[in-house]
Length: 67
Image (cartoon, rainbow, N blue to C red; front, side, top):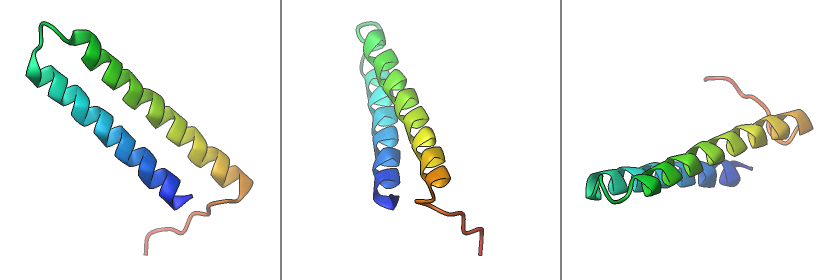
């Protein structure tokens, strides 16, 4: 489960980086690309959050606290 969560975070950061790249590349020609990249980031973030909630409710992960 830790690997899935780590991959989700990497996908979120990759989507954010691609939106930044398209925003800096050419603002007038690619506003739809930036919006699409940010939409993917939001969708993956929500999916990851729901996956963490489901994994916790099923007992696949447990909180350990800060040590």
